[in-house]
Image (cartoon, rainbow, N blue to C red; front, side, top):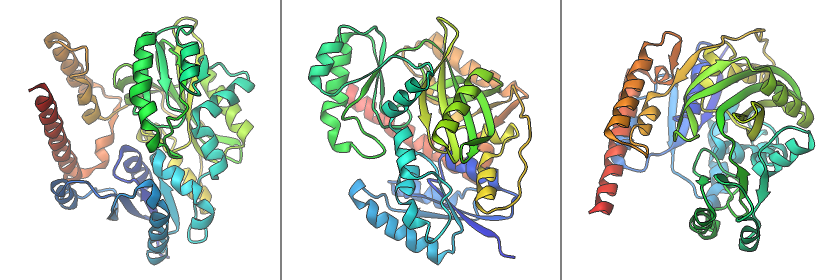
Length: 409
């Protein structure tokens, strides 16, 4: 019997690598696909330093938003010519694109992701907040900024610091911490008013939100469900984020937090979610209560921790889609940590920084290697892949530092 062929989209990022790692050893033929690196040097490094988790790897040119229909046409041709059984998009951008064209792509392969109506609804952060509010789930105070007039009306009434956030976006590229009304106005003018041309189903800053800033730790719930029935649910805490004030998790530890798990389950059941889903929470240090701040309908960046803790959610998703038998354990390992050291290094020079702070950050970085209950995402790369990533990262840092030096000159 020939192996089932699985296409992983946006495959060279943390999410894609973890998805491939989760499926290794399950007798699937794994094909990675991602955008062609912009520079020829990095293209050459990537070709030489192949990623060990994939049987094949394909690069494609980056498509603009207007060219998405052409991308889908080329993707269809690839799926048919390579006899792909399942497509697994990772990352927000490609997950939403595949979901939008799910009906069309489903003629050629299995697309085990929710329809675009549900996917787009939860990706819209304001919609997600309104849903939680209707369910009685604690959230930060959230206001929608329709235009400059709305901003003028509320900017002197809200408490600071506050969060200015795009309704649609991912990571920290559309989230800004503002500490007073002047900073809010400036951030709005620089990042919202002049950025309408970039609005898409993935990222939309046209009507941003202002959210109450919740002090406290960032926690997550990762989940796999079938038609609104939660099958696997895991909680974790972000021990370190990049940026340090509250970005993506670069060091995370599994927990067993019944409060946030119950909230996640309530939402899954309400929307009858099918597939994978991640929830972001802040544990408010003022009252100790969990406040839900975001819902992410995609394969998450810390998937490797979920898998290593004992809940292989990408594998459950694939096997369920193929009607293959699978078993989900009743428990997972609590207290297990995962880290991505290359992203940790990005925080070394984060402001405010001094020689003392820099040394403390480096020392903490090195000290963590002594933790025995720690797994590393870069284990997925293989020696060649790791060498390639290190070289590409070094080149990117040199280019960045060169640009900074030119601005300061």
